[in-house]
Image (cartoon, rainbow, N blue to C red; front, side, top):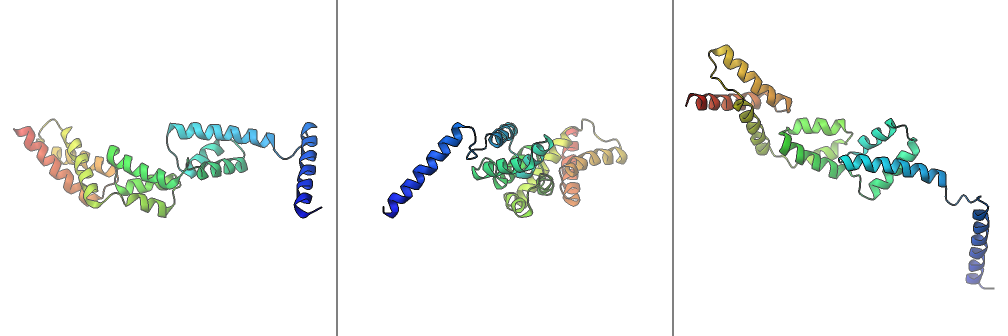
Length: 199
């Protein structure tokens, strides 16, 4: 018997042994219990990802909170990462793009949010590169103008002016813009609003 025929014979015997064991329910080739657990974790993970994109750490934390087994969670996370359904780089890039445009967030605030979601420093930095200083200043200006428009009366004295100014600066500060830039843009927007109210 040549080597190839010998290998084929061994494979036939192994297959016969597997089929007999499987028929008796003794096969360990496929762990049904483990696969069922993975299916439950995968189902929940996909539901969470269907709601919105998530970081690896965020999804893992949510699944752990649901008291799934950690080794099963790690396997599912690995599967989702390999299939690109879970990708911190894509998540961080989209998070920055959307939150900067829609919410008027500063790069500092976005960095903090991504850090809270467990995104590593290098990935955060790469995602934040899409925001340049001019864009950030324009975003801050838009926030200041929007907040200043909520002022409906001309300040009667310095105290009223300072109160209105604090409201505009506060809106910028909550979005993480630097104090100096916030103060400059808040004054500019508030002064423009006061001029509009005078006319």
